[in-house]
Structures are given as structure tokens and as C-alpha cells.
Amino acid sequence: MWLCIPNAQEVYELAESTQDWGYDQKGTLKRWQENVGKYCAGNHILTLAVLIALSGPLLKFFPNIGSTIFHLAGETSKGKTTALQIAASIWGHLKQFLMQWRFTDNALEGILTLHNDGFLALDELSQLAVKKFGPVIYMISNGRSKGRFSKDSELKEIKSWRLNILSSGESGLEDTLNETGDKVKGGMEVRFIEIDTLISDEIGIFNTLHDFEPTDSSKRREQAAKFANHLKDVAAKYPSVVAYEFMSRLVALISETPGFADSLYKLYKVALDGLVSKFKLADADSQVLRVAESFAVLKVAGTMAIRLKVLPETFEIEESISFNFARWLSGRGGKKNVEGEEIVQHVRDYLIQYQDRFKKITKNTDDGKLAVYPGQSVIQNSLGYVNVCKEQTVYYVIPKVFRDEICKYYSVKSVRNALHKKGMLQEKDGANARVRIDGMQNRYVILPVNHEAVEQNSTKNDTN
Image 1 (cartoon, rainbow, N blue to C red):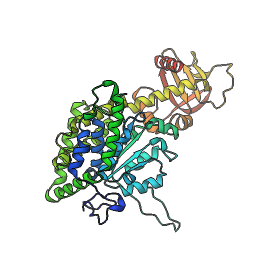
Image 2 (cartoon, rainbow, N blue to C red; image 1 turned 120 degrees about the vertical axis):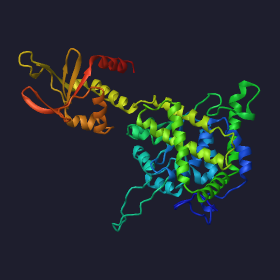
Image 3 (tube, one colour; image 1 turned 30 degrees about the vertical axis):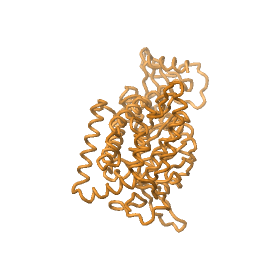
Image 4 (cartoon, rainbow, N blue to C red; image 1 turned 135 degrees about the vertical axis):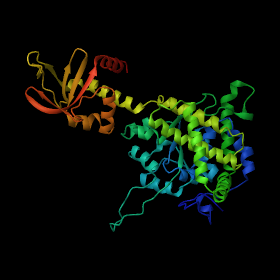
């Protein structure tokens, strides 16, 4: 039996015993299509869940696209777990393929390895057990465990994996990182693709209830709950049949098709070009294009599943990809460099919040030298100096403060780049400038901020 199981080799391993892994199947593909698949049609989030579940075996053909977490965020009892259960049952029993985020990073490495080239669903992000979530996101995407030594000082075997994960939770990336003391970085957002799932307050994540749609519109909420429960029940009746048929037919196609990888890449390129054209991404930030690449792989997976007659031709792949990519893009705030804007805003907010910790200075009209205003009280833990000019306020920040406090949640390089693009960083030959203040010469990070930006931020902070 060809199945995508742990430690897959050149193609995929032949499973001698599938029961222990949760791959043992029940029912038939036709029954799954009639009782589960037909209800996914027209429901874009359910369709997305199916595509994510089927995409893992194809990642080996796209080595530049790492493992990705697709996260369904939104209120509880709106259907998110239903989507996860449908996706998990594609591969097998829920006990092995639908778990919660209650893992240490060591345990998670083992679970990911067991699902290599396959699929894993992780529910309830709020149950996260690790102390820092940011490193976990990068670990999953990089596909390799940490290097560790045994008690005998021998390097343990490095674990590896390659799969896409479907996640869910009421909280999203930013809230989770805040709880663990991290900060959102652009590199995380392309590895943790967060999609707002609430389509309707009445029917949750669903676009349509199909034959569960009530004649009385006031009962839609009640019928949506019945629809979700029905999907959970029927999905559990047909574990692994979809993955088995998909993998069996995929492996046969790979074996029979010379240049299969090239033909698959052409499909991917068409899918990616379609997203770039539809959403006008030619001038988009590189992070947006990275996410578009991940969605393009999902479209390839769906296209292959239809060609192999695992999914019906009525499965609305194009609509689901466009719908969910648009929701992600909207949630992100558009196609431009959000991280750069976020960094600039962070620096401005920091300077406003701690402006009382800067000693005020002025430029002497006679000799042009900078001097401290007389009569100021002593400032404990001073951050540097500030010179309020006619058009802008110039902050002279102590380099250590800039590195350890202002850049606490970002790399120094990314902060410098973002500030430089906004004209908020004054440097001397790419380094901190030497400045003489009150006769003492030292290096400072010089940050000029125009008054309009300061006033806008002050107003914003006052109203929050």
C-alpha cells in the first residue's frame, strides 16, 4: 500500500503496517465524495482545508518553499474545528492527525517527523505549551530539529520533516507572540499564514449550508450547527481513503511520467502568475509574493487531485484560493511592506513614550555647537539627547539603547533599513555619527522626526 508515511525516501515508502500510524482506511472514495466532498464545494474555507491536507506530498518538488502553518483564526463554535476534522480525516484517524498545540518544542519535533510528507492539524493555539512561539514558527518552516548532544557528547540524529499544517484558534499570531514575549516579524507572517474565518455571524466559516439551508432564515444559526456536526460525523466514517487514493495514483503517475517534476513546476508557475495578475502583485512586497507561492502550491495540489479523479471537477479550487488569499491580504493590511511601516511606527511610538528620558539640547547661534539646556533636572537612565528644531525634532540616541531597547524585537539591520527609507536615520558613512555635545564627543544614532509625525503619534497615543 503506497502511503505518505514517516521517513519517506526517494518517492514514498510502501507501508507494511498502517494501523499503528492511524492510516487504516474505512469506506470508499466515492462515499467520501458523496457525503463529505460535495459539502466542501462552495465553502471556501473547507475547500482550503482539503487543499492544505493534500499539498504535503508535493512539497518535495518545491524545495524552496518550506513547511507552512495555515492558521484559521476566529471566534469559537463557528466551524473552525470542523474544517480541521475534515482535513485530518483525509489522512486517517483524528487521534493521530488532529492534535492540540500542547507540545514542548522537543515533542513537536517528533510529531512533525512522524507526519513527514503528509499532514498535521493542530487545534487550539491558546493551549500552546512552549515559552517562545517565534522560534517554533521558524523551526517548523525550516524543517529540521535543533542539533543536540547525547549524554556521551555525541550529536543526536537531526530530525527532518516537510509538510503543511492546518491550525486554528481564537487568537492569532500577534496575540500569541505578545503572550510569549515575542514580536511579530515579517518572516513569521509568511510562515504562519493567518486567515480570518468569520464569514457570517449566523453561519460562521461557511458560505453555504447546501441542503441544510433552512426555509426560515431565522433558523440559519441553528442549521449551521447541525451542518457542522453532520460534517464531523461523516468525515470520521471515511478515514484515510482520500489520502490512500491520492497517494496511490500520484505515485503511479510519477513512475509513468518522465519529467514529472518539470510538468508540476509549470502548473505551479501558471498558478502563481494567475495570483500575481489577479491581485496586481507585480510591485508587491517580497513577503506577499512568498505567501502567494504557498497558495500556488495549494492550487497545484487541488489540480492534481482533480486530474487523478480524487476530487470532483466541481471542486471550486480557483474560487477558494482567491477568496482565502484575498482575506489574508486584507488582514495583513495590503501588499506593501507592512513590516517596514510597523518598524517606523514602533520607533516613533518609543521616542514619544520615553521623550522625558532625553536631555534637551540646543545649537549655539554663535559657534553652531550643541549644548545642554541649563537648569534641567538629572535624568536617570538617560537615553540620549533631543534637539527640537523648527521643522523637526532630532533625537541623539545612545547606540546601546538603540540596539537593546529600540531594536529589542527586530534585527538592527531591518530597523536601520526601514528608518533610512523614511528619512529617519542620519548616518556617517553607514555608521553611527560622532557628535560633540557640551564639549564631549561620542557616537550616536541620529533620528530626525518631523513635527507632523510626532504630533500625529501624540494624538494617537492620547486617544488610545
